[in-house]
Length: 128
Image (tube, rainbow, N blue to C red; front, side, top):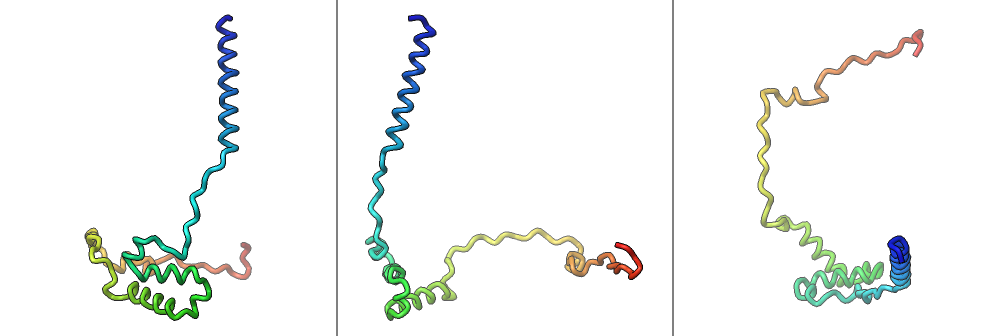
């Protein structure tokens, strides 16, 4: 066997191996994890915040949750927590100092107050 024939044989073996590996990969079925139930939240979430458990249960109920008194209480508590004046995070981002303003006044920067070119209306005898 000369070198040319050996190279051709190696190329054919490589292509056959690549095609076999591709066929195996395409026919393989992935094992999907079992779907997690929406109604049963994880145990650590139940310990951390019982309101979250109620909200997830209400979400799973769908439209029937609008007539469920427990869901109404959970939504009211969630709104109270979210919209309460002290509900903002304790740590705030540091204030960014604004760059100093130039000697111009605010009226000079206002684009509405700047003069614009007068609007020239076409005359009746003019051609557009």
